[in-house]
Length: 415
Image (cartoon, rainbow, N blue to C red; front, side, top):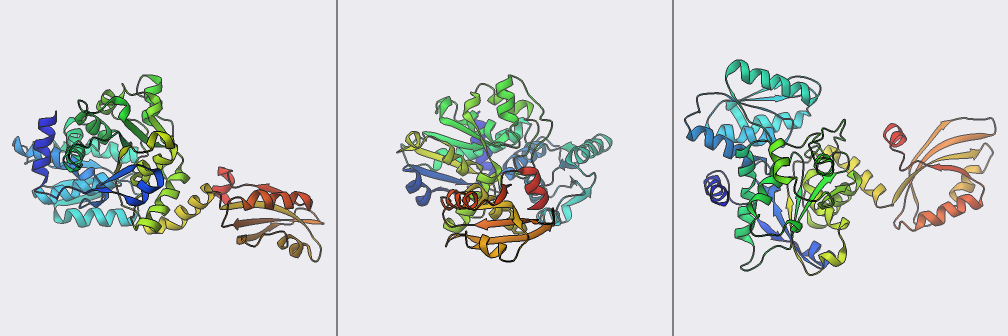
């Protein structure tokens, strides 16, 4: 496998330079380790997906198959990598996207592919879009370019590992490699390349809590299709791990797959933006967010490589990301208050707030009784330890309240 991957890596240089492997001083100091970031957010399409697409196209064209149309179904990074490669090889491609795809993603895909691609918006959900793409391929004798479940795609993603091996300081071998998991193409490729170099326990896989397809499948012993997924981490929200990918990963232990709360990922995104000026998409922040889930003593003085898988982030999502990050950090909470309907009641409540407590949301909901009213209030603070003290003051004052911060149904509906 190594020889083929290294050939693919050399061929890929005609498309883009190797992405940097950077020692991150901030994270290294934070965890007492040597933390390297493999910056796949710096490819021409800001994700590693371009690698698998390029390798797939390269092999088909080398075998004389360039006369057919290439097809993919994707609403994200795979579509953009596919489009870029179509333009590079000057071959026609059709991208199927759900009708619900944000215009920004449609525009970026069109920009990368130019005259060589056609975009078709079909279906409200990805499954409908994918089915339409498959039908098109069969009717037009085209090539379906899968996002992860294909040997050539896996080989292309494995070039990430070939670059890491070349870019690490001489004599340095990583103690830990942290990989984000969606469909499993990147993880299958990287672990396969390092098979003879690193121990199996040197790998940690990161999935969002809302899409644990790899962890569930390993724990079960066979591929499991999740009944539903949380699409917030859209680059890794996959209901079913790829068949070839699972075959390559099923021997790992289930405890090597860590599940990351979506709000924890948001906290990492905000930290990297504010401290490092690095823009990451939710899936791109998965590997870095995982560091907080690991035993600090197990990290100390170790050499750790985190694959930063992408940076295609729509800044219209930033308020939601910041909101989730603050809630996860314990710096923002939401309450339903039951206040007496009398003059001075609101003033009495405000006097309960501490000097660092700030009202971020205040909304009168309804008059639930003649003598009492309900209020939705959001409170931000600088120190999470302020909230236990604030709630104690609420209790002492006999104030009726309910903390709805972690109530997902109410939070999605009201907040």
